[in-house]
Image 1 (cartoon, rainbow, N blue to C red):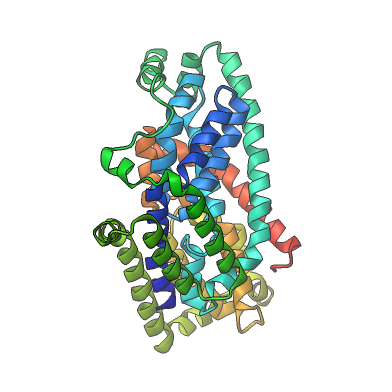
Image 2 (image 1 turned 30 degrees about the vertical axis):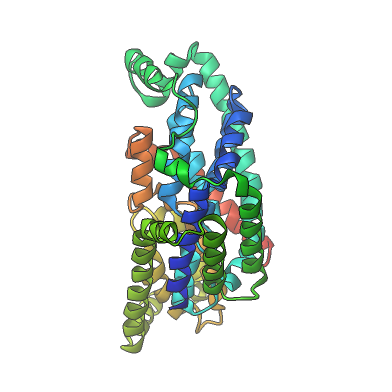
Length: 395
């Protein structure tokens, strides 16, 4: 119930924070800073993916970033698949936050407070941000050489997308002169609070600091955060109710998933099914593999994402692994960290992610091409993060 409550209020909190426009200047500023330089555009894309996913909602991340970046990529002749890979990887790093999904699901499985699971991951996240910016710079240099070798942006897009030159020229015509930023409807513009940006930034920092400190459970932190945010930005009760209705569907859906998963796991555990499954698996494993099973799975966790959704990974695979590793003396938090770090970067490279399908549609890309082009890069990146986790003493 604590996890479900956290998700309900976290989704509303970040939804309202997006409504006020707090994150928009950050993303627009990054776009202005990087325009025209291919290397900086690639690095900026990674940074934008990290920043835009602070609300933990993949759909919002891609809706906010892809319409803004696609015209810029088209004008420069850069590959949209590079954009998708960098955005997906950046969002994957941010996805370790307690309100983003997998840590909260792990809380529901293990009973360990979500902020307790997250705090040891902070150094891994910081390492991931630095490594991703370096990776983006390297890809930016490669992309610049590719565009120069092609001779023109049209030829560069044709080579990157696997199309003819005329199709590439038409795509640049479709996007190349568009404004580099998502438009706002009148209703969205009416919700912006530019004069309260510093007040909202202070609320955001205070909520984040309270989460890191662990003074209060995450559910209470977001509950208080939503209350303060509403009163400061939308004191009229009618507007408050309208904002709650706008974000209630996503919030209640996630809350229902968590509650249903908790009931499912309770029945599986109480009936002895998990223990039977774990016993059968242990009998088939060599004795030496049992204490390091979580690490072995962490190494292949990202490709597993291609055949398991996040819910299946956290609510079906993780409980079985815990039943095996915990009796072998492996702390539950260590098992969670290994499986989460190895898997989480691939969240938006999986066909089981609805947000990824949205990204593919917004970018007018092909899912097979996206997965083929980014799988090995993201897998290698996740292995480096696992090694960083080991250096930081998580395993």
